[in-house]
Length: 90
Image (cartoon, rainbow, N blue to C red):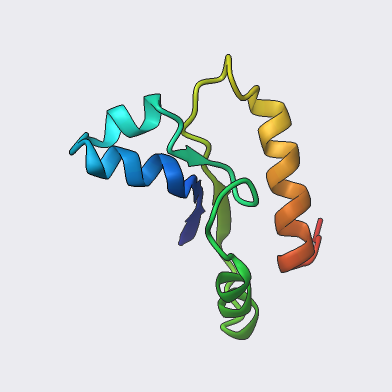
């Protein structure tokens, strides 16, 4: 079992919806990003993980253009944000 974690840029999502665009267009426009770089509050997710003694994987998703958001930098930002919420474990 695993949980996918991704964030969304609200202003871009609102425009994608207003323009009645699909998922792929949203990705190309930069609607999605890594946790901590968008509008989603991951504190309730972290609380669920802790309180339920969840033992699965937490998978960070970054559906964004790698030339605009280099993957390694995006992952580092996401990890820094999530480690503070979930607690860093090795």
